[in-house]
Length: 331
Image (cartoon, rainbow, N blue to C red; front, side):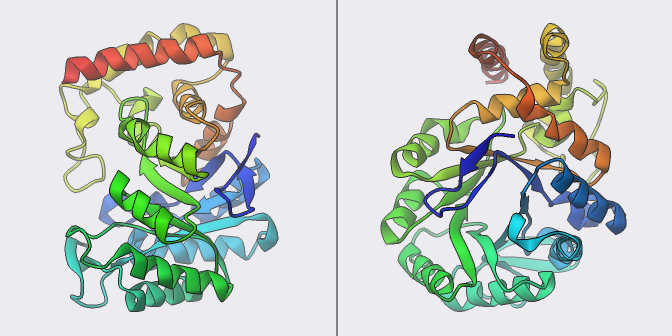
């Protein structure tokens, strides 16, 4: 599996990582078998995947607990672990973000709050160091907590050896530029699929110009681009797919028609449509790392095959044209 640097951190990993949001369970994803999740993380390691990504808020600490349990069975120096701070449900400090599973969650990027988030993550996962720490969501009110204050605390944590690299998630171009100016930002994490390419316009070019990596999540649109959802599928109330644009009843059949048009490509490369879409993401730029969620062994085994697909530039552009046509139809 191809190796790529994480910004200017000096850390190099395979271009495909394992996302652990679903491992947190709860009403976002439904109940989960924790031992199956541990086994899936171990299988990912066996397949050459070395970047494991979670967040404090995934399952309100449960995902981190499961990741920590899995890490006890792996060589720590051969695994890159990332988690996220700045979403907290300890108190009402910060800007209200959402309510779920009995918790009210607030965006809080103050130095004191992200410091406590980090300490909680270290304790939950049983670690002394987090390899990459992201700020999960930024201030709704621009400048409520200046980026320089947040970055200043992140740099302190790095100097103390508690984190190795600094990341930011869900940013716009101004916030990205502010992070880069305030300190050494190594990576951003943003949603990107062949049907949702917002970061491609401004964020990715900035990252390429400034030596910052882009870790993309949801490359197969929470499973829709696997082609396994029937035309009449309807997300359950409260689950993560509810209200997503491409999961709307009128859009699922359109997406499935596009995927059926790529059957010759799946035959040509001996792969699945999910593999095609993950590989497509990785070909956008050498700065891109692709993050795929999984909590079952067959899922991670399928995902791991994606980056070995020898997709041609011609087929990459063909897929882009087909997706562009569907996006234009959607409006």
